[in-house]
Length: 365
Image (cartoon, rainbow, N blue to C red; front, side, top):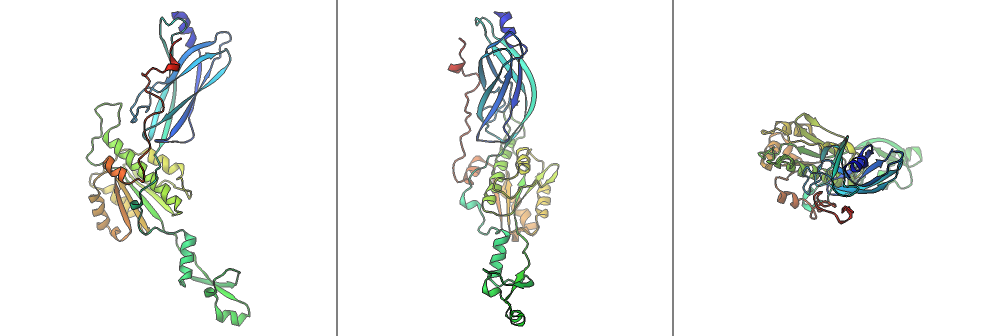
């Protein structure tokens, strides 16, 4: 039994397929491709799963869910699908797989490990926001701004051109039309497009930076998860409203301004930067002050922070940004976070039970 079980797992080749995008709180499918390169010996009754990763119900570092490979003939390949809902965002280092078998008689359990390092990037969760989060005045897109200015008889005059069907009569320049014998209308300079800016404060305040259990995220990490989720949700909501937007991150390494893109779903660069957020060290708000000083002339300002909003309010007033429409959104506690969303966040329970829970379909024959 011992010799056969060892031969059962020896020499198999495994490959991991990660999805292009994994969002926290949403189901994701990870695939394990198993190849049996042996010429004569098939593989029987093998459990395969990740050695470790953020597979716990709240993102704890635990072994991954296992899948059963009942039979794999020589020279064949099989694809095992692991469906899981990751509880929190982040960049996680996966090390490889563990294989278990009790073939053929169940007298022994043999283990084998396959080293296959990879990075799993879980992007922040994007959720609908409550109505009170949005400022009363949001910037319009460039076309709507120009149309509104022209309807009011805007003064950004550039030149005259021939009349085209659909031009408002108020644009007609009657003196030039009488002189040339053809209708002439005024053309206007495009107005500078105003923006909404989302400033992310990475300092979690006085929250503990280390957890008692190394396999669990610290309170500071959880606070940064809430900051990243809310910032990503703000960018997505602004995109759905066709509002030009910027993202400025006050990180320990300096100010970051990853590209956001024009579509409702932010570009991967912005989402990846939020996924990789680490707790900053900015107790006096120096980094945050630099970020606010970089923001000049926007029509709307959102500051997402995990500490008390009083410091941000003082910085806004000290540097003259208080005249801007601004909203400080604090996610210091779970209650504060829930208050900012339109509905309860999706469940974070994994779709697969913990690895130590026996599964009927994995029972040893």
